[in-house]
Length: 261
Image (cartoon, rainbow, N blue to C red):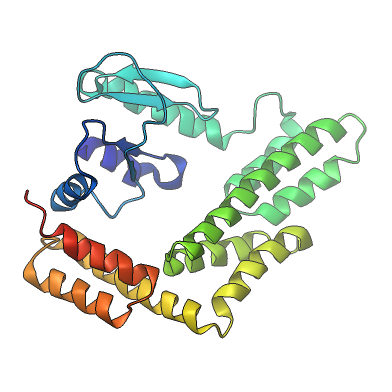
C-alpha cells in the first residue's frame, strides 16, 4: 500500500492507482483503517467493485493496465516491485508520445497537448489537416484530443454534483486557460464555471463547505486523523453546513472515527 501511494504521488495525473477491498470488510471499517494508516488524501481511488478478474487468490494481489487498458502484469506486487516500476515508467513515457502511427510532423501538436496547451495543439492539427496526406491522421489526432479534454470537463461536472466544489474550481480554471480560443470547448468549460460563479445560494454553500472540508482533510492527513480536535472540527463543519454534500462527507468522516481499529 505505501509503495502504491508513493507511485501515485510521484506520477500524479499520469497514473491512476485504484485500491479494491476484496475480503468483504465493512466499508466504514476499511475506510477508517485507511485513514488511520494515512493512506487517504492522495489521488488514489478506493472501491469495493472489482473492475477485472485476475488469476490467483493470494493477497496482496495487483493488476497493471497499459495506457490502452490492456493487462500488462498481475500477481503478487511484493515479488515484482522492479518490474512494476519499470513498466509504469515505460507507459508514462509512452503516454507522453504521440499515438502509434502518428506522422512525426504531428508530434509537435501532441507535445503541446500533453503540456496542457489544448488550443495550440488543436490549431496545429487544423493547420496540418489542410494537407491531403495529413488530413486523416490530423483528424484522428484532433478527435482524440477533444475526447480527452471533454472527459476532463465531465469530471469537473461530476465533482460539482458530488459536492467537491473546491476541486472542481481548480480543475475547470486550468481547463479554461488550456482551451482559450476554441469556442466549442470554451463554451462547455465556461458553462460549468458559470454554474460555480452564479449567485446560487445552494452552490455557494457547497463551495464554502467544500473548501472548509478540503482544508480540514489536509490537516487530518498530517495529524492523527481521528484525534478529538479533528473529530470535533468535523462535527462542527457538518452542523454548520448541514444540507450540503460536503457537510454529509464531514459527518461520515466523524462517524468513521468510532470504528474500531
